[in-house]
Length: 249
Image (cartoon, rainbow, N blue to C red; front, side, top):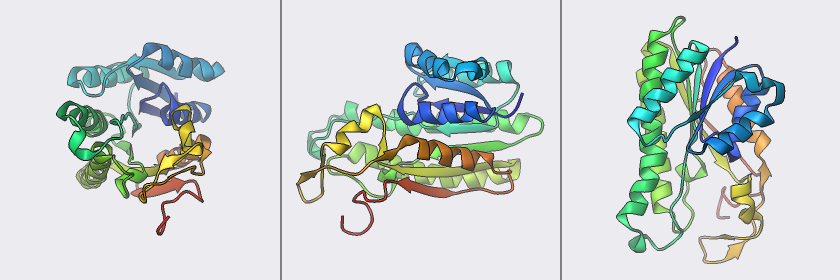
């Protein structure tokens, strides 16, 4: 049947591009997300490979939903070789002191706790299967390194993903579980089209920013996932070359 991947946030954007890349390369893929309609659209875009796609409606903030996601994946495909922790959300761009506790929690619960819950279930599945082991790839984002203005919840959660990645890589060693992180900058998806129109900068200005094809991200994740388990990309940054990230912008 080939290797098996779970992709969270697979209904759109980066998650959809990565899921389709896996399917094109012969993987079986569990497509996880909150909206069944968008997951079905991702599977339909896979064409003949759609028979290797399993759409699972799941909110990664809910432990029971995450347990079901992994149980159904193992029931359908027999194992889990890779998890792409990609599901994420952001809070409205506003001054830090104006953010509500509910807005903070919504971001942290999805971006950090959701990744933790999926990682827990991946460990359980990967330890128990034969041959054992697998790979976890976390979507860290450029914000895991450098914030945008008015982005405290998203930035804090993505910085924490770096810590989760390192802890997972360490704790997974004894069980043949590798973990790495991909930090993505300005990949063009329907959600990021506004980058080309103008984004707030640290100096208070609003300027257009260069973007890159999301397929570059998909190929990078596929490369990370294709390595043998005795090799690991712990951290990889893929970004639009001319975006204002390196140096002073």
